[in-house]
Length: 363
Image (cartoon, rainbow, N blue to C red; front, side):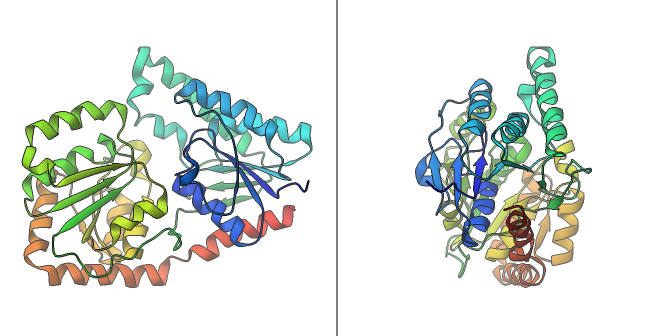
């Protein structure tokens, strides 16, 4: 049986993860064969990949279990690891099995830990364990033959072959917004938690009575009770806010059709201050106006593209939404600016093509 060209290991991120889809799609579109180890529903998997069964358990111990055994089951000539907790195991397995080890780093893991409430539990012990895993993962990713990172500020900086592989829009995932629905509608796609603007979005929903909201993504366990209580306390607003849960990228972006606005309301945590959320690029690419918080790079991008506005509170967001509902022509100008900027500046094919070129060289 012929070995696949690339085995992708994702012990934490599920089959619905957008970055996993972008990478797998870039490889398979170029004719490379890919097998994939990741938890989640097979219906959410990228097209044209071979799925390998993994245990579906949730939590840290299950992640470590998948991280430990998946690299040893990998058949690919290249083992491409997308999970921090699996990097060291993948490096060892690649050496023993005489395979090529490549790595992807999709977050600055150490700063991301400061955004996670679970890292503070048990007197910070879980955070210290997570920090150790992150540092270990970064150490081994620097040893990979090719290391892709999600943005310029993401370590490691001393990798053998480092490629900045931003989360640029993949057109195969996206649905253009097209003509606006009669009813004003805003969308959010991503993890649903306080640090990513959950409370700000719902605060705006209560103050913008003509707007409807589609929120696509998993609600964090720490925030689910708060959401339930908000729904009880704001019954009218709750009828206009739909939580769709986790979906594969292509299904998620179907909610863009007819929508007016995309929301990206990250709080200024250490992990987010230096980042540009992929949603900003995607909202512009599908023709949505964007509301973002005043994170430096996000605000600068919106100012440069003239595709939206900056707001840092639920009241400010609601005021913008109500203004645009009264003046949709102004909103349409912002939407057109975003589309124009995206067409001139977001060349996903070139950036992901650099990854494919390096993979081809290794093979």
